[in-house]
Image 1 (cartoon, one colour):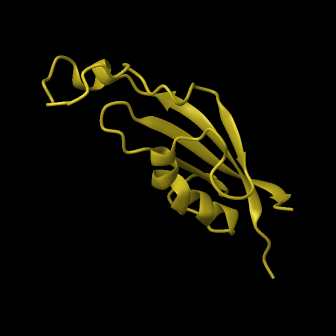
Image 2 (cartoon, one colour):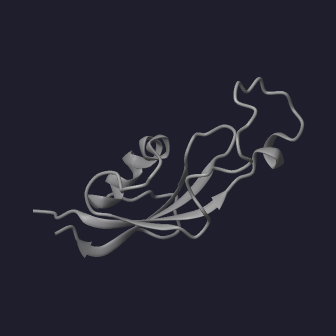
Length: 109
């Protein structure tokens, strides 16, 4: 029987709203948004054993959960150069965050 593995999430890049959209009027109903996502900083890491980690943005978790689960249970993405890894992002259209997911050798206890 296959055992679940731990997965490490690393924040690779927090994209800046102004760099992506410039001065374009996108009709945002919240103009006071910070230029980058306030929930994450580049280099931040999370180790996943069970469920959403404490302090992790719920929207980002909903976006990447399926990829975390795939790696956790032994799946791979054939277009990635290295097995056990996947690059993904949240779907915030104003301030997206890019994450590197890595399956760790340790079983979930």
